[in-house]
Amino acid sequence: MTIYRGTFLDTPESPFAGGRLRAETDGGIGVWNGVITARGPFAEVRAADPDDRVVDLTGGVVLPGLVDAHVHFPQVRVIAGLGMPLLDWLDRCALPEEARMADADYARAVAAEFVDGLLRAGTTTALVFGAHYAPAMDCLFERAAASGLRISSGLVVSDRILRPDLFITPEQAYADGLALAGRWHGKDRLRYAVTPRFSLSTSEPLLESCAALLRDVDGALFTSHVNENTAEIDTVRGLFPECRSYTDTYDRFGLLGRRSLLAHNVHPTEAELELLADRGAGVGHCPSSNSALGSGLFPLRRHVEHGVRVALGTDVGAGTSFSMLREGLQAYFMQALLGAEGLPLTSAHMLHLATSAGAAALDLQDQVGDLSVGKHFDAVWIRPVAGSTLDVVLPHAADTDDALAKVFALAGPGDVSGVWVGGDRML
Image 1 (cartoon, one colour):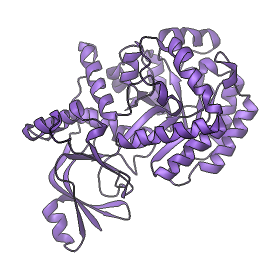
Image 2 (image 1 turned 180 degrees about the horizontal axis):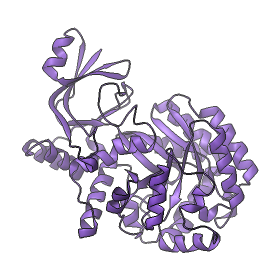
Image 3 (image 1 turned 30 degrees about the vertical axis):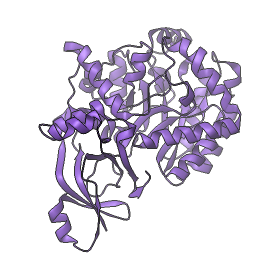
């Protein structure tokens, strides 16, 4: 067994349901074959196994591996395309770049940049919005498998409204998706996710094809977008006049369930929140992207009050970085700006959204999300760069909640000093 010594912070019980930050300020975590077998004060864990190797992670804090619930693989090189609303940004920035993924060599280079970006930010698990081309998806899965990260992704499918070189037929979408799942689903730490881009660009026959693929790939996830932008919502309403809502465009094909996650949901109706809660589907909240595109302020309180599961995503490239810590801080800002309609967040809420909530949304709550005995040792060590503002203020934190708040406010990828997945050190 290996014993890790440090300050460990996690949220095994949701702060939205009365849970609090759990902290071991001089803690010990014992790991055997990648699984946590002991946790407690370091002196006690060490005394129980005095001959085991000790890894010193003192200085800074150790958090569960961060979980990104919504991040786009092909958009790394167009991060920070500011000044446009969603549909304009898609036409001018995202879609031209996504068309370049038709070149497998180009896609392979972007896949390397993408996976490296996740790792350097301390993200150990991600639900990745993939590419429109199967060879590009092979490049992503190949790189993800080599990295050891927990990646779920799938071929993105569309057959209308977008540029034609991104289109696919329902028959080809099913065949390509099934072949990709056969090669990668369940291999190493990879899973397949059925991924229509959004119902705006996906016809009913193509959504039926997605539903068939979801049924036929055991354990697959489903992900798409919903209610991000008011112009988008209006367009979807015209395309699906028989549906009660944007969310219903997915539900009527049987696409919503415990392993389903819809990104954004900035402008939901009450009926949509009730439907999501009833189906057990999750929502990926992408606060930096919502701010950059001017999409709106996410109604977190309404989601929580309806019992809808919410996790955080960086989005990329409509977002601003791979940092889940930055997303937590931006979520805090958004709720503060909503005033009485917002849901005030503590540092424990931010950590929960960036870790255990994401694990639950991706149906991995039994494996990762916190640092409890029985979970895999997925962890990130945040140790401030010497002389940085975080390095100056962290020793003066009032308590562990305050220390965690300072981490969310000031830490970035440069402060990520170690990353472990399943007990394997990746960085």
